[in-house]
Structures are given as structure tokens and as C-alpha cells.
Length: 387
Length: 158
Image 1 (tube, rainbow over the protein chains, first blue to last red):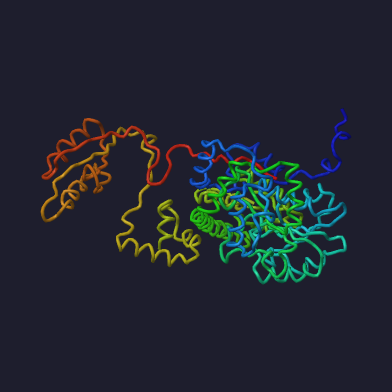
Image 2: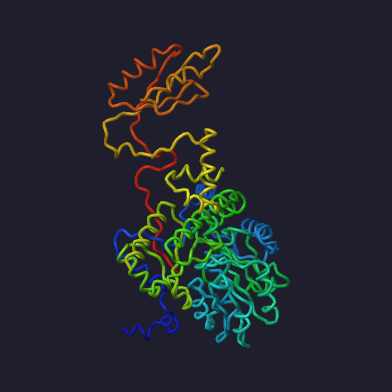
């Protein structure tokens, strides 16, 4: 069988994920201290787990409506009102998705025609460009720089807009840099966006994990709501990665089309997770605050750790990643990470996995105990000392 | 102050510099806060959390329920302090409910422990009765889970 002919050219043309490639190397080495995962080390709050157990015991295991459990959509609506001061009708402006990732996929597929350009800030989450390509669109990288605190500048954005620009991503708090966008900066972006007809896909999955001022969404700036799709989820904020649950809020004309794709692709999101998520939104603010506080301490510990080792490290203000620069070592990201894992058995992710401009950096996740972080930093110190 | 205590509870070996970084203050400020916590009697010691089973030293631990008659003037303090002074005793707590003092002790052998209860605790003036329970397994001590805690996160990636 000629599989190359059998398989979709578009899929075959997708580059394998740079993180995946690196994980394969990491898995071949024994006793690795990893700082490479992208998920919380906390367990899901007990109240949420208990709710799922109760739902199972009661045998509530049917599908929900396509858009999601009505009770959850109402809770999400209340949550968005509280968190970003934007109102979305639970009836037709919210869809509950299989993780934030599905929401991103839905938004792109609902918006993009073949040949449309989608602006993708980089370094950024690795799924944006492949999803755009699968929809027949053309991803256009928008470089964010350390000297701008890895924020998207209005100048960069403006320089990339063409008549073909259909949408842009706004992934803040950012994975992998930890950068956030403040209200004033979002207003500048909104000023540029407002002159165009493009949509904004605002990936706010890390919105609860900010370590200074609270998160601000582009959707709350001026009239941006009419073109914004706000994507969020339960994985990071509530330590619910395995529950596979996210959501999107947006104008009903966009959400209704996203819902169409969602219903053909997956019908609805997992029922048990949806019931449990109601408890997460309504009753777990205290747990989220406690986790955020713990991440904050680890964040400071990690950043200081790298700076003490002589590596420049941008001060992340959100998510749970640090993005130290390794330019001073003279090595590229891939070489640095491969050698570090082979020589000192510490796994961090090469920055270029998140876009070419991530070259010269590595992504370090600090969703680990301080003891674990401390052991890893010690080994990285030995590695740097031996160079 | 609260945050510092919380960090120390989990790991008392962090240096002043590390604690300072985590709290966003200076190492000097951490040192001053620690000194105050000690002076105020909030921090009364720094101890390692030991997995006794792995330590492999001949020892038995027990939890003793002690019923006492409180003394007119001193209440429970007098007898509790007397029990607390023995080296074998690891903790003494005044309880509500069916008994008065919860005492944990560690001795070299079962015989030694029996002897300790009979000769040291039971004869104390005011002790009405004791009930001794031997420890036969440990799962969590001072907030630390004992045994292998596996990181179950798998190498998943988009």
C-alpha cells in the first residue's frame, strides 16, 4: 500500500511537534529530572472529584446537549462576567468543548477560508499553526521579543496585516514565555485590530494563573467583544487536565457555527466532567487561589535560580513557565537541551519548539515541588559549570 | 508572616535567600522574620520528617490515651508537662472527648515501652488510666506522604 498517496497531503505536510520530538529523546534516558511537562502537579480539588463520583453513582451518564450542560453554561457565563466583566448568554454564546484545544480548533475552522491568513504570536503554544493549516489557512508568525517583555506590540501586528488577514491569536498569559498583556497594551492592540475586519481568538487558558495584576481580556476592551472568541478551560486553573474540558464564549453568529462543527465532530463534551466543572467554577475559588500562590513562590524560586546561574531570565507574570535565555552558552536550544538531558539528565524544552524566534531560549515548567526544582537547578548549574 | 510559616512547614531547609526569592522580600527581612517567629515561640524547632520504617532501627512507637484527674490549681498543665519531659515522649496533646491526653512515645522495644508506661506514666499522681496502641504502619507524617509518591504526569504534548 502506498500510504503516502493514501494519506492526506495536508496532514503529511504538518511538521511533527517540537516538544514531541524532544520528549522522545527524554524518554530514552533513565532517571530524568523533568521540568518539561505542561500540566499542574496538583490534584483536582476534592470537591470536584467528589461531584464526579456522585454523578457516576447516580448514573447520570447520558450525553448532554451539544453546546454543553445548561447548568455549566450558566456557571461559565457567570464566571466570565466575574472574571473578565463580559456577558455571554448561556443560551447561544457559550460552547463547552473537549479542552481549550478543541475550542481553538472550532474557532479556526469556523472562521478560516482556504488562503486566509491568521496571525500567530510566537513563541506560542504549538497547536495554533497546525490547526490553521488544517483549515487551509496560512499562519503568519508575529514575533514577540524579550526586550518587549514578550508582549505583542501594535507595530508588529500592524506590519503583518494584509487584505488576506482573517484572524489573529492572542495567547496571553503565554505558554511558553509567561508574558501577560496589560489593559493599556490590549487597548493598543485593539486600536490596530479595530481598523480591520479580523477576528481575535483569545486563548486565555492561563487566565487564573497571573502573579501581579489580574488577567484582562481583549473582549472587555471597547467593541472588541463582537469579533473576539474567548477560549478558556479547566485544565490549568483547576488542575483538571485529564477531564478534557474547556469552553469558548463569543458572538452568537460565530458560536453557532463553532457549535455545528462541534456537534458533527464530538457531539458533546464528557458529561461527568461537565457536572464536576460546575462545582469547580462555583465552589473552588479558594483552591485556585492557594494553587496560584504556590505557583507564585515556585516562579520566584525558579527565576532566581536561573539568574543565580548566570542565565538571563525574563520575569514571567503568568502561566507556570519560565523562559530563560541560553544564548550566552553559545549553543542552540536543541543542542543545549539534548546535551543537558544526556549529560545531566534534566529535561527542559527547546524554545524553538514554540516558533523559530524561540531559538536561544528553553522552556522550564515550574509546576513541580521546590525540592524537585532545586535538584534540577543544581544539575543545570553543574552542566553550565562544565562548559 | 503566614506565607513564610507555610513555606517552612513544607521545607524547613530552604535558605534565607531562597525563601526571600519565593516571598519577594530580601534575605535580611527573612532572617528578621524568622528571628521574630522564634522569639515569639511560634517556631519552636526544626525537624526532619523521618520514615521510621526505612530507618531500620529497633524501635516501637505507640499512641497512649491517658485519663487524668486535673489538679485544682494547675488544671491539666502540671501532669501534661511532667509527661512531656520524658525523652521517649514525642508529643503530648490535651484532647476533648473520652480521654484527656494523647501521648505519642517511641521506645527501643515492646518490653521497654511496657515498662515506660507502667513505671513512668501510670504511677504519676493524677493519672487514672492509660490505653496503649502500637503503631504498625505510617502513611503520612507532618504533612509529608510516606513512601513512593510517583509523578503520574505522562509525556503528552500537542
